[in-house]
Image (cartoon, rainbow, N blue to C red; front, top):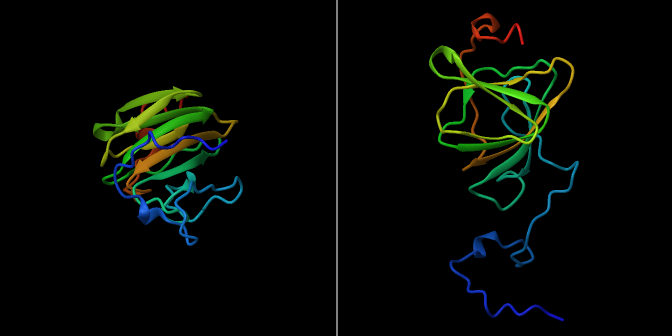
Length: 160
């Protein structure tokens, strides 16, 4: 039996998302076929599952970021993009603030919001296990790498 769609009102025009067939439909990126052609910060390996590079999305980047054991990113920010993250596995730290003197720690199941234009450093606290994040940005995956700071200048990094 067909569902009754008469109670749903279309508010707006989604025709810009039509596929070549003319149909407006969900677009699935199958596991293993994500787009690896995305900006990175040193060893933060980002792959996109939903992005302008391979879906009709124009205002969203959604992907997975993997950090090797003991890894920390170079100093960077994400321009105008609002960033949301979810720690899928591992333990994370984000340094921020004046001279990167402040930080927040996260573990599996934690969520984080990083405001636009906020310089920060993403870290994998574990020296033996990878860290995996699910990350989303609007409008897309903007990565602006900045002059890096030495490990010694990051409070509690060397002694973690």
